[in-house]
Length: 378
Image 1: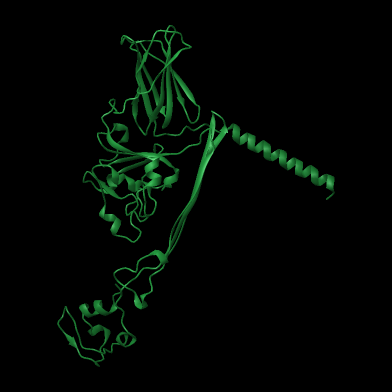
Image 2 (image 1 turned 90 degrees about the horizontal axis):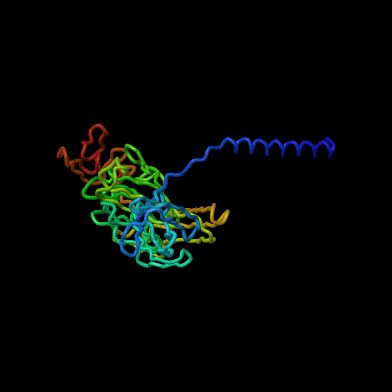
Protein backbone atom coordinates (compact mmCIF):
# COMPACT_ATOMS: atom_id res chain seq x y z
CA UNK A 1 0.00 0.00 0.00
CA UNK A 2 1.32 3.42 -0.97
CA UNK A 3 1.98 6.07 1.68
CA UNK A 4 -0.81 8.37 0.42
CA UNK A 5 -3.36 5.53 0.64
CA UNK A 6 -2.15 4.66 4.13
CA UNK A 7 -2.57 8.27 5.26
CA UNK A 8 -6.11 8.38 3.84
CA UNK A 9 -7.02 5.17 5.70
CA UNK A 10 -5.64 6.50 8.96
CA UNK A 11 -7.49 9.81 8.52
CA UNK A 12 -10.76 8.03 7.74
CA UNK A 13 -10.35 5.80 10.80
CA UNK A 14 -9.74 8.81 13.07
CA UNK A 15 -12.80 10.64 11.71
CA UNK A 16 -15.02 7.60 12.19
CA UNK A 17 -13.76 7.14 15.74
CA UNK A 18 -14.50 10.78 16.62
CA UNK A 19 -17.97 10.58 15.06
CA UNK A 20 -18.80 7.41 16.97
CA UNK A 21 -17.66 9.04 20.21
CA UNK A 22 -19.80 12.13 19.57
CA UNK A 23 -22.79 9.95 18.70
CA UNK A 24 -22.49 8.00 21.96
CA UNK A 25 -21.94 11.20 23.94
CA UNK A 26 -25.06 12.78 22.46
CA UNK A 27 -27.17 9.88 23.69
CA UNK A 28 -25.90 10.02 27.26
CA UNK A 29 -28.54 10.92 29.83
CA UNK A 30 -27.30 12.77 32.93
CA UNK A 31 -27.50 10.66 36.09
CA UNK A 32 -27.56 12.56 39.36
CA UNK A 33 -25.93 10.83 42.30
CA UNK A 34 -27.84 10.08 45.46
CA UNK A 35 -25.80 11.97 47.97
CA UNK A 36 -25.95 11.59 51.72
CA UNK A 37 -27.05 15.22 51.55
CA UNK A 38 -27.78 17.61 54.37
CA UNK A 39 -30.19 20.54 54.70
CA UNK A 40 -29.44 24.15 55.60
CA UNK A 41 -32.40 26.16 56.84
CA UNK A 42 -33.17 29.16 59.00
CA UNK A 43 -35.12 32.36 59.54
CA UNK A 44 -34.18 35.92 58.57
CA UNK A 45 -35.34 38.64 60.98
CA UNK A 46 -34.73 42.33 61.58
CA UNK A 47 -33.22 43.90 64.68
CA UNK A 48 -36.64 43.85 66.39
CA UNK A 49 -37.09 40.13 65.76
CA UNK A 50 -39.72 40.50 63.02
CA UNK A 51 -39.62 38.18 60.00
CA UNK A 52 -38.23 39.57 56.74
CA UNK A 53 -39.96 38.03 53.68
CA UNK A 54 -38.40 38.39 50.22
CA UNK A 55 -34.79 38.43 51.42
CA UNK A 56 -32.23 36.78 49.11
CA UNK A 57 -30.18 34.12 50.89
CA UNK A 58 -26.97 32.83 49.27
CA UNK A 59 -25.25 29.60 50.25
CA UNK A 60 -21.63 29.30 49.06
CA UNK A 61 -19.31 26.34 49.41
CA UNK A 62 -15.97 27.76 50.56
CA UNK A 63 -13.89 24.93 49.05
CA UNK A 64 -15.54 24.68 45.62
CA UNK A 65 -17.05 28.16 45.16
CA UNK A 66 -20.41 26.66 44.12
CA UNK A 67 -23.36 28.85 45.19
CA UNK A 68 -27.12 28.48 45.53
CA UNK A 69 -29.76 31.12 46.26
CA UNK A 70 -33.20 31.07 47.83
CA UNK A 71 -35.89 33.58 48.81
CA UNK A 72 -37.44 33.81 52.26
CA UNK A 73 -41.18 33.15 52.47
CA UNK A 74 -43.82 35.14 54.32
CA UNK A 75 -42.50 33.88 57.67
CA UNK A 76 -38.91 34.81 56.81
CA UNK A 77 -37.91 31.15 56.46
CA UNK A 78 -35.55 29.73 53.83
CA UNK A 79 -34.48 26.19 52.97
CA UNK A 80 -31.59 24.64 51.01
CA UNK A 81 -32.19 20.88 50.51
CA UNK A 82 -29.63 18.40 49.17
CA UNK A 83 -26.55 20.26 50.42
CA UNK A 84 -23.21 18.47 50.07
CA UNK A 85 -21.16 18.26 53.27
CA UNK A 86 -18.47 20.90 53.75
CA UNK A 87 -17.84 24.42 55.00
CA UNK A 88 -20.23 27.12 53.80
CA UNK A 89 -20.81 30.87 53.87
CA UNK A 90 -24.43 32.00 54.34
CA UNK A 91 -25.40 35.58 53.46
CA UNK A 92 -28.74 37.44 53.34
CA UNK A 93 -29.52 40.61 51.35
CA UNK A 94 -32.60 42.88 51.33
CA UNK A 95 -33.08 46.44 50.18
CA UNK A 96 -32.76 48.85 53.10
CA UNK A 97 -30.74 46.45 55.24
CA UNK A 98 -27.05 45.66 55.61
CA UNK A 99 -25.92 42.28 54.31
CA UNK A 100 -25.83 39.69 57.10
CA UNK A 101 -23.11 37.05 56.75
CA UNK A 102 -22.42 33.82 58.65
CA UNK A 103 -18.92 32.47 58.06
CA UNK A 104 -17.56 28.93 58.45
CA UNK A 105 -20.85 27.07 58.71
CA UNK A 106 -19.99 23.38 59.00
CA UNK A 107 -22.47 21.04 57.33
CA UNK A 108 -22.10 17.35 58.24
CA UNK A 109 -23.64 14.13 56.96
CA UNK A 110 -27.46 14.11 56.90
CA UNK A 111 -27.71 17.14 59.18
CA UNK A 112 -30.44 19.75 59.34
CA UNK A 113 -28.21 22.74 60.05
CA UNK A 114 -30.11 25.81 61.22
CA UNK A 115 -28.58 29.23 60.51
CA UNK A 116 -30.72 32.18 61.69
CA UNK A 117 -29.62 35.70 60.70
CA UNK A 118 -30.61 39.13 62.06
CA UNK A 119 -30.33 42.03 59.60
CA UNK A 120 -29.58 45.61 60.62
CA UNK A 121 -30.91 48.73 58.81
CA UNK A 122 -28.36 50.13 56.37
CA UNK A 123 -27.08 49.89 52.80
CA UNK A 124 -26.78 46.56 51.02
CA UNK A 125 -23.10 47.30 50.39
CA UNK A 126 -22.52 47.18 54.14
CA UNK A 127 -22.16 43.79 55.80
CA UNK A 128 -22.48 42.48 59.33
CA UNK A 129 -20.56 39.25 59.98
CA UNK A 130 -22.16 36.94 62.54
CA UNK A 131 -19.77 34.32 63.90
CA UNK A 132 -22.19 32.27 66.03
CA UNK A 133 -25.15 32.05 63.66
CA UNK A 134 -24.99 28.27 63.19
CA UNK A 135 -26.49 26.31 66.06
CA UNK A 136 -24.25 23.72 67.67
CA UNK A 137 -27.19 21.50 68.64
CA UNK A 138 -29.39 20.08 65.90
CA UNK A 139 -32.85 21.15 67.04
CA UNK A 140 -34.69 20.40 63.78
CA UNK A 141 -34.26 16.63 63.94
CA UNK A 142 -34.76 13.91 66.55
CA UNK A 143 -32.05 11.64 65.15
CA UNK A 144 -29.63 10.18 67.67
CA UNK A 145 -26.15 9.47 66.40
CA UNK A 146 -22.56 10.55 66.11
CA UNK A 147 -20.51 11.98 63.26
CA UNK A 148 -16.98 10.61 62.83
CA UNK A 149 -15.02 13.24 60.95
CA UNK A 150 -12.00 12.99 58.69
CA UNK A 151 -9.46 13.90 61.39
CA UNK A 152 -10.57 10.93 63.47
CA UNK A 153 -10.71 8.56 60.49
CA UNK A 154 -7.15 9.35 59.40
CA UNK A 155 -5.44 9.80 62.77
CA UNK A 156 -6.92 7.04 64.94
CA UNK A 157 -5.20 3.62 64.64
CA UNK A 158 -7.08 1.02 62.59
CA UNK A 159 -5.81 -2.54 62.40
CA UNK A 160 -6.73 -3.52 58.87
CA UNK A 161 -7.79 0.05 58.00
CA UNK A 162 -11.55 -0.42 58.06
CA UNK A 163 -13.11 3.00 58.58
CA UNK A 164 -16.40 1.47 59.77
CA UNK A 165 -14.68 0.05 62.87
CA UNK A 166 -14.69 3.60 64.22
CA UNK A 167 -18.45 3.18 64.69
CA UNK A 168 -17.42 1.66 68.04
CA UNK A 169 -16.89 5.26 69.23
CA UNK A 170 -20.66 5.79 69.27
CA UNK A 171 -22.75 4.90 72.34
CA UNK A 172 -24.60 1.60 72.22
CA UNK A 173 -22.17 -0.02 69.75
CA UNK A 174 -20.06 -3.08 70.59
CA UNK A 175 -17.89 -5.40 68.53
CA UNK A 176 -19.70 -8.49 67.30
CA UNK A 177 -18.52 -11.95 68.34
CA UNK A 178 -18.58 -12.82 64.62
CA UNK A 179 -15.19 -11.14 64.28
CA UNK A 180 -13.48 -14.00 66.11
CA UNK A 181 -15.07 -16.88 64.23
CA UNK A 182 -12.94 -16.74 61.09
CA UNK A 183 -9.31 -15.97 60.44
CA UNK A 184 -10.09 -12.91 58.40
CA UNK A 185 -12.95 -11.69 60.58
CA UNK A 186 -15.97 -9.86 59.24
CA UNK A 187 -15.29 -6.24 58.47
CA UNK A 188 -17.76 -3.76 60.00
CA UNK A 189 -19.38 -6.43 62.14
CA UNK A 190 -20.80 -4.88 65.30
CA UNK A 191 -23.95 -4.96 67.38
CA UNK A 192 -26.02 -1.84 68.00
CA UNK A 193 -28.49 -1.63 70.87
CA UNK A 194 -28.25 -5.41 71.35
CA UNK A 195 -29.30 -6.30 67.79
CA UNK A 196 -27.52 -8.61 65.36
CA UNK A 197 -24.86 -7.16 63.09
CA UNK A 198 -26.97 -8.05 60.03
CA UNK A 199 -29.55 -5.48 61.19
CA UNK A 200 -27.22 -2.59 60.31
CA UNK A 201 -27.69 -0.51 57.16
CA UNK A 202 -24.62 0.73 55.24
CA UNK A 203 -24.85 3.64 52.81
CA UNK A 204 -22.11 5.17 50.66
CA UNK A 205 -22.98 8.59 49.24
CA UNK A 206 -26.62 7.73 49.85
CA UNK A 207 -26.46 4.47 47.85
CA UNK A 208 -27.18 1.05 49.36
CA UNK A 209 -23.84 -0.59 50.26
CA UNK A 210 -25.03 -3.73 52.05
CA UNK A 211 -23.66 -7.19 51.25
CA UNK A 212 -26.80 -9.30 50.85
CA UNK A 213 -25.27 -12.74 51.26
CA UNK A 214 -27.03 -15.59 53.03
CA UNK A 215 -23.77 -16.90 54.45
CA UNK A 216 -21.66 -13.76 54.02
CA UNK A 217 -18.64 -15.74 52.84
CA UNK A 218 -16.91 -12.52 51.82
CA UNK A 219 -16.50 -11.75 55.52
CA UNK A 220 -17.70 -8.18 55.05
CA UNK A 221 -20.97 -6.42 55.71
CA UNK A 222 -20.26 -3.96 52.90
CA UNK A 223 -20.02 -4.34 49.13
CA UNK A 224 -17.59 -1.43 48.64
CA UNK A 225 -14.95 -1.31 51.35
CA UNK A 226 -13.75 2.24 50.89
CA UNK A 227 -10.29 3.34 51.97
CA UNK A 228 -10.28 5.54 55.11
CA UNK A 229 -8.35 8.22 53.20
CA UNK A 230 -11.16 8.41 50.63
CA UNK A 231 -13.92 8.96 53.22
CA UNK A 232 -14.74 12.55 54.15
CA UNK A 233 -16.82 11.59 57.18
CA UNK A 234 -19.60 9.24 58.20
CA UNK A 235 -22.50 9.30 60.62
CA UNK A 236 -23.63 6.45 62.87
CA UNK A 237 -27.34 6.84 63.53
CA UNK A 238 -28.50 4.54 66.31
CA UNK A 239 -32.06 5.62 67.07
CA UNK A 240 -35.13 7.57 65.88
CA UNK A 241 -33.76 8.07 62.38
CA UNK A 242 -35.94 9.25 59.52
CA UNK A 243 -38.24 6.88 57.60
CA UNK A 244 -36.03 7.25 54.52
CA UNK A 245 -33.52 4.98 56.29
CA UNK A 246 -35.85 2.01 56.60
CA UNK A 247 -34.86 -1.64 56.22
CA UNK A 248 -33.19 -2.18 59.61
CA UNK A 249 -33.55 -1.80 63.35
CA UNK A 250 -29.83 -1.49 64.02
CA UNK A 251 -27.59 1.41 63.06
CA UNK A 252 -27.45 3.43 59.85
CA UNK A 253 -23.82 3.99 58.82
CA UNK A 254 -23.99 6.84 56.32
CA UNK A 255 -20.57 7.49 54.72
CA UNK A 256 -19.61 10.25 52.32
CA UNK A 257 -16.81 10.12 49.77
CA UNK A 258 -14.37 13.00 49.50
CA UNK A 259 -14.57 15.28 46.47
CA UNK A 260 -12.34 17.64 44.54
CA UNK A 261 -12.07 21.35 45.32
CA UNK A 262 -10.61 24.48 43.70
CA UNK A 263 -7.23 23.50 45.17
CA UNK A 264 -5.27 20.41 44.20
CA UNK A 265 -4.83 18.06 47.14
CA UNK A 266 -3.63 14.52 47.63
CA UNK A 267 -1.56 12.19 49.75
CA UNK A 268 0.47 8.98 49.62
CA UNK A 269 0.64 6.37 52.34
CA UNK A 270 1.95 2.95 53.26
CA UNK A 271 1.31 0.94 56.42
CA UNK A 272 3.76 -1.89 56.99
CA UNK A 273 3.91 -4.84 59.37
CA UNK A 274 6.92 -7.15 59.48
CA UNK A 275 7.77 -10.46 61.14
CA UNK A 276 10.83 -8.91 62.77
CA UNK A 277 8.63 -6.56 64.78
CA UNK A 278 6.12 -9.22 65.88
CA UNK A 279 6.20 -11.09 69.19
CA UNK A 280 6.63 -14.89 69.19
CA UNK A 281 3.37 -15.46 71.05
CA UNK A 282 2.34 -17.81 73.84
CA UNK A 283 2.55 -20.98 71.74
CA UNK A 284 6.15 -21.06 70.51
CA UNK A 285 6.69 -22.91 67.23
CA UNK A 286 9.29 -25.61 66.78
CA UNK A 287 12.78 -24.15 66.69
CA UNK A 288 11.55 -20.82 67.99
CA UNK A 289 10.99 -19.51 64.46
CA UNK A 290 8.09 -17.07 64.30
CA UNK A 291 5.46 -17.64 61.63
CA UNK A 292 5.96 -14.97 58.94
CA UNK A 293 3.56 -12.04 58.78
CA UNK A 294 4.39 -9.34 56.24
CA UNK A 295 1.64 -6.87 55.40
CA UNK A 296 1.77 -3.83 53.12
CA UNK A 297 -1.18 -1.48 52.73
CA UNK A 298 -0.43 1.42 50.42
CA UNK A 299 -2.23 3.89 48.21
CA UNK A 300 -2.87 7.46 47.16
CA UNK A 301 -5.60 10.07 46.74
CA UNK A 302 -5.75 13.02 44.37
CA UNK A 303 -8.39 15.68 43.86
CA UNK A 304 -8.67 19.07 42.21
CA UNK A 305 -10.56 21.27 39.74
CA UNK A 306 -11.38 20.51 36.12
CA UNK A 307 -13.26 23.78 35.65
CA UNK A 308 -12.86 26.15 38.57
CA UNK A 309 -16.05 26.70 40.60
CA UNK A 310 -17.90 24.19 38.43
CA UNK A 311 -16.39 20.74 37.84
CA UNK A 312 -14.02 18.72 40.03
CA UNK A 313 -12.41 15.29 40.21
CA UNK A 314 -11.27 12.97 42.97
CA UNK A 315 -9.65 9.55 42.73
CA UNK A 316 -8.12 7.08 45.14
CA UNK A 317 -6.28 3.78 45.02
CA UNK A 318 -5.39 1.32 47.77
CA UNK A 319 -3.35 -1.86 47.48
CA UNK A 320 -3.06 -4.76 49.93
CA UNK A 321 -0.31 -7.38 50.00
CA UNK A 322 0.11 -9.94 52.79
CA UNK A 323 2.27 -13.00 53.43
CA UNK A 324 1.15 -14.97 56.47
CA UNK A 325 1.55 -18.48 57.82
CA UNK A 326 -0.48 -19.50 60.84
CA UNK A 327 0.78 -21.70 63.64
CA UNK A 328 -1.46 -24.82 63.57
CA UNK A 329 -1.39 -27.71 66.05
CA UNK A 330 -2.58 -30.98 64.49
CA UNK A 331 -2.74 -34.63 65.47
CA UNK A 332 -1.66 -36.74 62.50
CA UNK A 333 -1.30 -40.53 62.31
CA UNK A 334 2.08 -42.05 61.55
CA UNK A 335 2.62 -44.40 58.60
CA UNK A 336 2.43 -47.42 60.93
CA UNK A 337 -0.80 -46.20 62.45
CA UNK A 338 -2.24 -45.71 58.98
CA UNK A 339 -1.49 -49.42 58.36
CA UNK A 340 -3.28 -50.34 61.59
CA UNK A 341 -0.10 -51.06 63.61
CA UNK A 342 -0.15 -49.28 66.98
CA UNK A 343 3.17 -48.61 68.72
CA UNK A 344 1.63 -47.75 72.12
CA UNK A 345 -1.40 -48.92 74.09
CA UNK A 346 -4.42 -46.85 73.05
CA UNK A 347 -7.82 -46.81 74.70
CA UNK A 348 -10.85 -45.81 72.70
CA UNK A 349 -12.62 -43.19 74.88
CA UNK A 350 -16.06 -43.97 73.44
CA UNK A 351 -16.11 -47.79 73.34
CA UNK A 352 -13.71 -48.45 76.23
CA UNK A 353 -11.72 -50.94 74.10
CA UNK A 354 -7.94 -50.92 74.69
CA UNK A 355 -5.67 -51.73 71.76
CA UNK A 356 -2.29 -53.20 72.74
CA UNK A 357 1.01 -52.07 71.30
CA UNK A 358 2.03 -54.23 68.37
CA UNK A 359 -1.50 -55.36 67.61
CA UNK A 360 -2.42 -55.26 63.97
CA UNK A 361 -6.02 -54.21 63.48
CA UNK A 362 -8.27 -53.43 60.57
CA UNK A 363 -9.85 -50.06 59.95
CA UNK A 364 -13.30 -51.53 60.50
CA UNK A 365 -12.30 -52.58 64.02
CA UNK A 366 -11.26 -49.09 65.10
CA UNK A 367 -13.80 -47.42 67.34
CA UNK A 368 -15.23 -43.95 66.57
CA UNK A 369 -13.34 -42.26 69.40
CA UNK A 370 -9.99 -43.65 68.28
CA UNK A 371 -10.77 -42.79 64.69
CA UNK A 372 -11.31 -39.15 65.70
CA UNK A 373 -8.17 -39.12 67.78
CA UNK A 374 -5.90 -40.42 65.05
CA UNK A 375 -7.45 -39.46 61.75
CA UNK A 376 -9.02 -36.03 62.32
CA UNK A 377 -6.82 -32.99 61.60
CA UNK A 378 -7.46 -30.22 64.12
